[in-house]
Image (cartoon, rainbow, N blue to C red; front, side, top):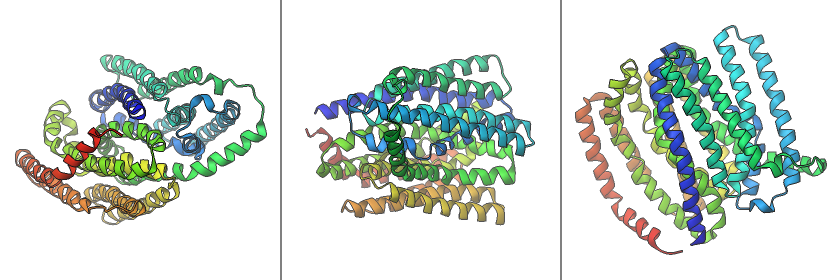
Length: 469
């Protein structure tokens, strides 16, 4: 009961942090494109796109710490070794950032793209330095510290963005600068909370080097898996940028930013779940898996029902992005497949220490994405087919992960993914081909039928949650 109560307290803290982040993301996604032109917004989205990959440059170091410390208590950590490692880590990140800046000035002609690269390099150092400490606090279940660092970051950025919007700022540059500064503020707070690690007296270099090697060996699979995961959707965006240019890139990025609204809270639950599941008994992991899977299968398709109401509201607010909202009908199902992958399958693969299998699944899915996007973009030259290929690759990864975990944990997959796929196919077809009102009615009816087919499993899951551990 104590573990369960702690889990829900941490969940509240994570949701509070994400609530602030949600307000910010609503403004960044809906208000920023209102003041920036399509080209300026494209460069802003290019920066956001690049920053999504800066985690690659810790080379699994932070992931290894996260996996190895998962379930431990903060007071029992080896502060000295972690502190020396952290100094090495900061030096490495700074050197990489310098190389990126030099390469940008030497190889890129577009001044706007150079600025984006420089901003990304600076952000990389701050982000990875923050990530290192946040992973420690997450692993040892100090979620409140993590949540406060996020809240400070988001509130500062929210305040600055609101000022820029009211000032009618039409350049993307101040938005990038404020984005970088907000991460510095978060890092300063973590320096204070992690002072036993950050400001530890330098000694024990040999132990720190050995520990660093172990962390990178352990974490590299997880890091590469995460990067491959990001690139599954990223490949399609790169193809769109290369063939159709920055304006189309901005439009498709706008649609993807809307799908992220539905995934934000999923990410927070998965973050809290990892240390919680590492502490519970192995015989209860399967029961928890089945319950979470049922809940997600019922809740995530609600995002499809919300498509038409959201579309109608946003067309009034951002009429110039009406085309992007049409693409959203093709991308919104990503919420179902990516939501299950992030909260359930990735979390369990980490708990079971199956990082290599996670990497294999993501790499295979990435290759599928590269092949499909390449064929659809460079051979067929079909913009809509590229978008569909992005969705297909994400769905493929989700199904493969589900089948593997079902076999690993000796449980039946139930083949419910077939019903999910059917719901998604119907949604895409009717949303793309029919008027909004007709498509909305059909999708609602389909979801009700889908809900009825899962009613028994849902009732059983709710009874299980009420049962005392």
